[in-house]
Image (cartoon, rainbow, N blue to C red; front, top):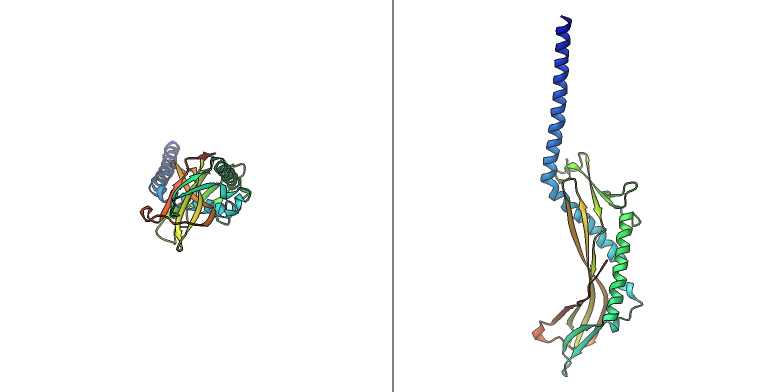
Amino acid sequence: MKRMRKRKQLKFKHKIILVIILIISFTFFWLFIYLKKSSNKIIELATLKIDTLVNQVLSEDVSYDLLKEVDKSEIIKISKNTAGEILNVDFNLEESYKILDNITTKVSQKMDEIATGKIKTTDKNIIRKNNSQNIILKFPLFITSNSPLFSNFGPNIYLGINFNKTILTNLKTRITNYGLNNALVEMYVPIEITYELLSPINNVEKTINYEVLIASKIINGRVPYYYGDEIIKESNIITKN
């Protein structure tokens, strides 16, 4: 009888263990399927958070006043015809290199400061863990739920951000008619930053595009109508970090 009882107890324990294993396996399988289906939405949310942070930093620290020491009047050369119409825009290579090198260095420095936590943010989803060289995004599992009641529930999902990617800069001018016989000359530096988003399901490379206005000036002259009252030109100089 004792042996029978022991066997029944063992069988009961085995069943309990089997049920627990099945529950755990089913839970992990369900979480994996849920993460896979919602990963695109989570990546969209993460991308929005990072883009907002980077754009905020660039707008505050990489601005019009960054290049006070550069003679902006020597950067671009404008060609006109005898009627005072603007025909062409060209770039001074030496001055252009100075600008792009300056901005590329500044942007790279700011990305390092974001990654190492030197630039603070009030966004509760952006955190840094001890001994981590990159920032981390934290979202509740059900953040993608359509119901606001459940969107803040569930275990946290962590996504790493790797900024150790290419930073490209270039020069761009835009000339538009301004008033009767004047033109507005604006010079921008388009910035392209690529970073890697490390999610639990897969790793995704993302790109941030930003334009910094570094100079603007009103000059005598008109953009001919056959140009559509606007001339846009980018230099062939591209610097990267």
